[in-house]
Image 1 (cartoon, rainbow over the protein chains, first blue to last red):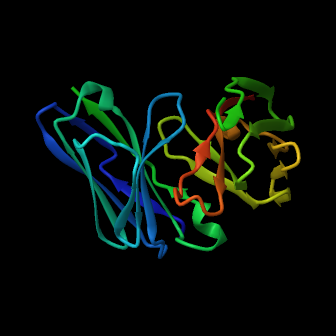
Image 2 (cartoon, each protein chain N blue to C red):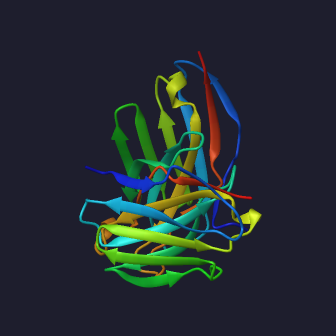
Image 3 (cartoon, one colour):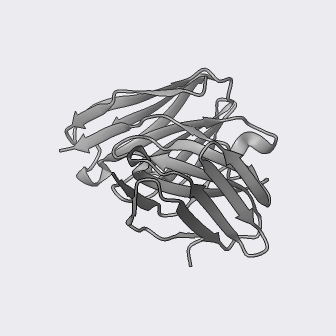
Length: 115
Length: 113
């Protein structure tokens, strides 16, 4: 099973709302990632978790707050977003260590619209 | 200069054609090379994963890596309309500590029936 699931598929929120994106994988991967993808652009890395600990934050604004409650789950908490944050948010996972850690499997994404 | 360069296309071919998609990269530390297929408004799907130089074949897809020229290719044989998508090449290094992939900008492929 090489599936990464994400919920919700679509999300519309106002600039004052608080919402959360969820990601789940059951491949036993210990590295999980959040990416942001704007239209016609490649994915941009936001955060990396390794063994449930935040290992990389690519200078993402604090209105995005990641959380990794356990080895299978990854959340992205959203608060006070701006319209320019509208994008496809992708979760990915990979093995942590060895040659395969670059082999990242992506979820279907959450399409976020900020009004 | 971007670390991974990819022609954005669009590339339009007739059904049944052999498609060649290419990327160049500049970072000599890259050792892992991937091709992802992304349909409109969906997440990227991993197609091919290769380590170092050489060829890898999976069904109609063949990935080639030439580290001497820093050139990576994906060939699609007997292309089908269902292959119409954006193809992203990506590269990674063994131990940068960043665990991040560097993506090309993606090539949009249209296979005409």
